[in-house]
Length: 233
Image (cartoon, rainbow, N blue to C red; front, top):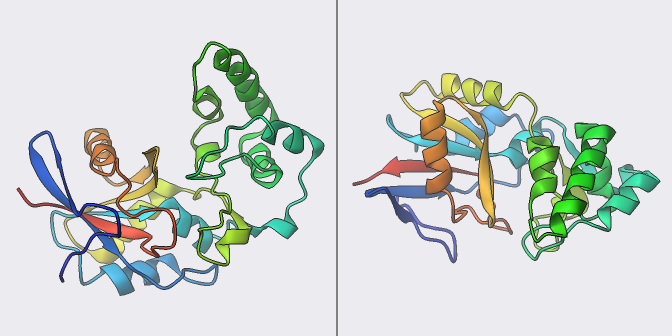
């Protein structure tokens, strides 16, 4: 295999004096009817080696678990409409900045938690502090993926929730591959990332967040929802 980076991304990165390749794996557009283990086996099965770390995006896990919802199937309540107006929108993702994604956050996280997160964020934002909403709302809220114009269809008009039982998914993939490697389910974007599910220890997971800090898979139309981290030097 000739490893190639996605456009605008670097194949290699050095962290703490160690160099790693982050090899993107291109797939077909994964749909609800796909079986995740089959997709991983087809595209990554012959590429991974002992010692690798295979990372899989939370989006394809959520999609194959039936956790992708067309916008026209989501009816936001008034509270979702109101709260979404106060979410900071960026060029890299819509987050909970539309009523439909905020509605799904209320369903996933519970209304009390989202209201608490919004109340705290309203206070701390006045003092120039950012990010408290998502810190309090938690990983389920952060993992909700809203539609953007650069998203591959049909997900440019769908909301995708974070994965269910991500640790179990990572373990299932590792067992299926049958190699001496680790598997991560990741939520990575241009602003940073989180490990949602892992077969490794906390120290390795934290290191891999740093290795993936520049989002080597991208978040537009690359169609590379998984990749390999391989130590090279």
